[in-house]
Each structure stands twice: as structure tokens, then as C-alpha cells.
Length: 265
Image (cartoon, rainbow, N blue to C red; front, top):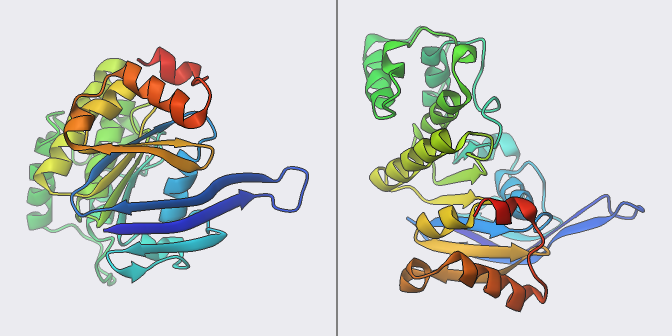
């Protein structure tokens, strides 16, 4: 589904602030893969997602999505192919618009747009059905402004919006990091359910090693702009947090010095 080959990215090249972030990164994602991504600060996790999404252009290498070269495709055109949920619950929705209007924007993202804006009765019925799977009561609040929702409700809504048109690839960038533990667990359960039921291909960055082990069929560990560990199948199922820490130390040649990751586990 996605093939990244020898991707490099350096910020502020040729200046005193030059910072190489991705260094010849290669990754092949198969259709139906649900990959969790872990790594310390500055490992290149979010930059990798931003390069896939087109927020940052890579300095070298190639990106193929479902066989199509998107290496130089503008971000707005990639948005038709990708779904994305950010760390900040406020980023994925329009606060001054209603739940119904937000869903309508997401639903029509890949469709031809005319002058007509009104939401049809059949669309409303579809939105109610989609919202009911969240089990948050939002199906009865279609006309409520999204700005009135809690962070967890907004993030769940963003997740639904990102998957409404079944994207070729779903990008999740620490999408539960800003939520309280109970709400984060709920959003993670919804994430797993939607990806499984809709047969989506997904790439999820997380700082929580337990979540990285529990979720998905494959786990990759990044360090210094490269993938240093890639595990799937029975080996992944049998992993423990202690195993990941040892793998990191062996592959990176140093102990993991990331309080956020260690405290989350």
C-alpha cells in the first residue's frame, strides 16, 4: 500500500541550525497493515508522517502509495488519499461548525462539489448511524457546535471524519497523547474497532510501549531518522516492554532516555 525508499529530510540545510531528521529511511506497508511506531524524541516519527502527508517534502528518495508515485504530489492532493488524526484534538475539526457540518465536509472531501451545500435526509441518516458506533451520544447532537464537545469527543469525531471515506492510508500521530487515561483508552478501542471493521491500512505513532505492543499486527522502532527494529506476527504478540527497551539499547547502542515514554509504561 505504501512504499518509502531511501527517504531523507534535513531541516534548515546549510545553516548553523541544520538538522538531519530522516536518513535514508525505507518502509514497505502492506495492505491491511496496522503498524505502531515508537521511538525517542527526535527519532523522526512525526516527520515521517508529515513527509507521507506532504506537509514536508523529502530531500531525496521515493514514495509510492498504492502503486502511484506521490513523492512530489502537493499536500492538498494527497489529502484525498489519506486520513489523518493529530495529537491536538482541536486540529481535526471546525469548532464553529456543527457536528453535522463537520461530517458533511469529511464525507464530501473526495467528491465533486457543486454550489449546493444543504445536507440531505439520507446523509443525516448516514451520519447518525456512523456516530452511533462511537457510543458517545453524538448521534442525537448533530446540530451542536463542535466547540462545545470535550477533547475526547472531538478526537473521536476526528477519527470518524478521517475514516468516513475509507482512506488508502490512515495516519495517527500520537492521537491520544493529550487525553486523560480513561478517554485515551476509549479512543484507542474505537481506533482498533474502526481499522478492523473497515479493513483499513494504518500507521500509528505512540509514546506508549504497552499500546504499541497491544495494538496492530506490526511494530517498528525508530532512532536517529532510521528504522532500527521491525517486528510482526507471533514475535510481536510475545513482546514485553522490557524486551523493547533491550532491543532499543542493542540497536541504538544506548539506553532509552525518554522520560515520557518510560513513565507511560
